[in-house]
Length: 200
Image (tube, rainbow, N blue to C red; front, top):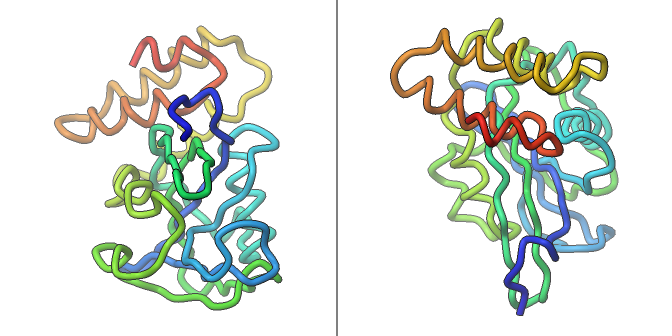
C-alpha cells in the first residue's frame, strides 16, 4: 500500500471545455495504464506543469496555443490507486477551447465525449478524475488575470521574489471567493519554488 506523496509519480491532467461541457478521452488499448477508462488530456511530467499541459494538449488533441485560453489551475492532488499499488501527484488545469476549433486525437485515444461536469462520475474513469476536475471547475477569472498567471508560471528570467510579487498583485485585484480561488491557483503556479505555497 502506498501512503506517501514522496512515492507518487507527478502527472498533469488538462481539462478542455466549451459550452459548459468538458472533453473526456477514453484511453486506448495501446496506452500503458488504465486502458479503456475515461480521462482528461494527461501525461507524465517532463517539464514545468503548465508547459507539460500545453504540450499534451498539442500532442493528444491537436490544440495549439491559439485555440486555448487558460481558465483554471488546481492545487496538486495526491491520488492513491491501492489496487495497482501506485500513486500519482496530479497537477490539474482548465482550458477553454476556442469556438470553431477542432480536436484531432492520436493513438492514445479510442473515443471522445463532451459531457457535463456533474456527469463525469457516471463513467468509468481513471482514479481521481472527478476530484481533479473539482479543483478547477467552474471556470472563472478574466483573460488578463490568467495571462498574468501563465506568464508568472513560465517566466525563466525573473527571480522567485519578483515572480511571487507579480502573482500576488494579480490575486490582490480579485474580490470575494475569486480571491480565495486565486490564492489556490497562485500556490500551484511554481511547485518547485517554495515561496509560492508559503505566501499563499
